[in-house]
Every structure is written in structure tokens, then in C-alpha cells.
Length: 77
Image (tube, rainbow, N blue to C red; front, top):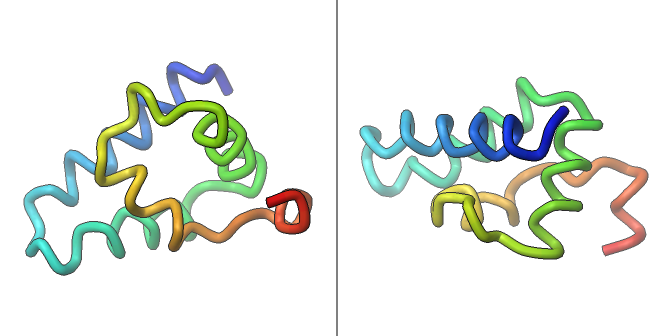
């Protein structure tokens, strides 16, 4: 997937969860990514954010710690 499209999708998820109670926002973003993004998309998300989080909404960045890192990257981080 193009980096711009992946960034857009992640930010759209954060936009949706911004309307939820504050204590559910970060968990909601991470849960959505874990449930609906395949491992390749999650791997690409981690690859992108390890070099720079520029362009990602703060809620996406905050949720990264709760996103399941694909096995192929688990040992690299």
C-alpha cells in the first residue's frame, strides 16, 4: 500500500475515535488496527513510524504501543 494511503487510513481511524470518551480513544485505535489490518499493513505502519511519525495524528502514535507487531518485526524492535 502506498505510504500516503496507509497514513490517511490510520489518521481516519483516529478521527473516528476522537468522538469517543477520552479513556477509550487510544485503545480503540489500536483495537481497530489489530482487528482489521493484515500483518503486512501493520508491518508497514511500524516501518514508517520507526523512521518518522510526521503526518500521523498524535492518537495514532500513542496507539502504536498497543498495536500487535507482526512476528516478522517482533524480534527486530
